[in-house]
Length: 528
Image 1: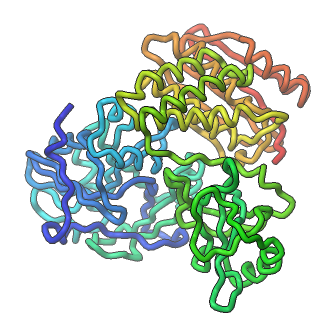
Image 2 (image 1 turned 90 degrees about the horizontal axis):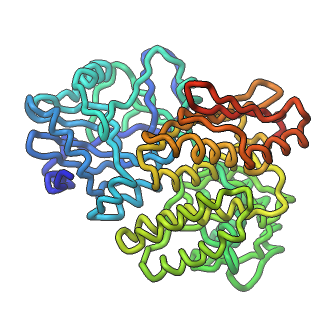
Image 3 (image 1 turned 135 degrees about the vertical axis):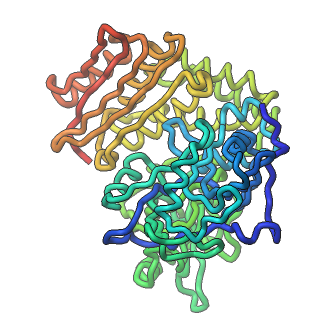
């Protein structure tokens, strides 16, 4: 491993001329003359590169990670100083940038070899500010982009972020939504780079996520009316505070605040329903009202970033809100106890989930508790969320979105075991995410592919999950390029459930070509 000593955080007066340019937030612009890029969920950073070192300069979010992987940038600085603009990311099991994973990596000043392997960073480059010691900021975007494409950036930890010209911006935004990306940045083709400025020549359109939460209190304005609501998610003994939706939040206007005044006053109580501290001066209410909020991202502690108001959800019970566990500071003693409890739960877990997978994961966690506690904490958190979902009783149907979330947890745990031997591709149409599917249907099919087709192959393989809307049906396909596998007990159980619920014409289909690999496919009626 290359020493991280060459990579340093730089700021202050030494580099005022290469502060990053920022985009304004807004809807996608219309008309010609725009290029479109994906907005990556990561840490913005300027890379000031020479042949002997790489200096990383934090953008809006700052930067404090130790990233020896990016030392490869020195390979492209042979003709003098090179300054690049880009985003540092850590990918999830589906190959999408995950800000939560990046935060886990950034929280460790000296990552171990295991963490470097488990949470490798990548640098997505989208602009060039200096080439061969000569500034390029006054060149138009399209010219700077052409220079970037000629750089021949090294593969692996450094990649040229894609740019789309002569393309409808909405198509790029739809693609971002399909793959769970952060959003889209539109850039004028003739615009120059303005260091340290927020410019209308760059327009960022962010995709926001939504979450049902429980209202546990409210903060008054000077007149005593509702100014903001305090929200949380279920936890043992009460609610866990996840944020405050106030007057600056999107959608939380005077009409919404006025409509909440009566119901919240009726639910007043003297004590807090939150298990931990909430905002001071809050007025507490019995946690009975649910609402839906939007947010940019979730922090490791579970807090929602920039929450906005969507709507009140009358008729919904707090038990229907998903539990979101925060990431805790790990210690070997606490992790030993958490591992013991996890092992105790395995015996009671649903019979559909392979004990082979469960015990292998727990054995893996036990082996890294003392060598890499942050990694062990992360794996235990993923395992807890996976088992909590699979533990649900009396559930016959779920949604494509919830099934995919659980499959991602499963694949995260498996990739910790297999590393690069397990590769994942996701192709899901946003329109099918709310479609109802049999509970654990995707899990059973994905687990079959990993355990029986990819794991036995010495070099591993690629798993592809596809879900498309063909009008009356949602068609789901799980394919792999492993050794191939036929029906097993889990697939037979899924086949019987599909036939019973939708009829024989919705039976499970399993194809195992002579050349290897397996394709499992089924379709369900589009019922949201």
